[in-house]
Image (cartoon, rainbow, N blue to C red):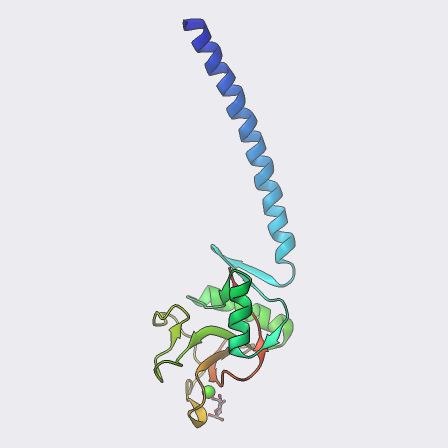
Amino acid sequence: KGDSGLSEINLLKRQVSTLEGQLRALQSSFSKYKQVIMFPNGRIVGEKIFMTSGYDGNFDSLKQRCSQAGGQLASPRNAAENAAIQQIIVLYNKSVFLGINDIQTEGHFKYLNGENIGYSNWHTGEPNNQSDAEDCVEVHSSGKWNDRSCGEKRLIVCEF
Ligand code: GMH
Ligand code: CA
C-alpha cells in the first residue's frame, strides 16, 4: 500500500507538470490572439474591452447594437477608460455617443443601469442642454464631453 501510494503521487506529479505546460502554451496563445483581435479597432483597459465596428447610428440604435452583441454602449468610469475611447475616436475621426444620458431627469446624468455617473469629462460650458433637447453625451477627439440630441448619428463604441 505504501508503494502504490508513492507511485500514485508520482503519477499526479507528472499530470500536474503536463497541465502546467499546457496552461503556459494556452496563456501565450491567448495573449497573442487578444493582440490580433484588438487590431485596430479595440482597446483593453484593465478587465474592460472597448471596440467599434465602424457603425454609425442614433443613441437607441447604438445602444441596441451593443446589447445585441453581448456588451453595452461605452461607459467610461475613469480617465484611462475615457482615453481608450478617445483613441478610437481619433482613429475614425468621428465622435461617439456614451452609455450615459439624462433622459429621465434633466441634469442628472446616469449610466444605462440607472446609476448616477461617478466620472465625467465635460467640455467647458457643458452640459448646456441646448434648446432643451440634449440628453445624450458625445465625446470629441479632445476626449471632452458635450451633451447632444440623442437623435444625432455618432460612431458606435461598445464595451465588453
Ligand atoms: C452652443 C454653444 C457652443 C456649444 C454648443 C453645444 C451644442 O451652440 O454653447 O459653444 O459647443 O452649444 O453645447 O451641444
Ligand atoms: Ca451641449
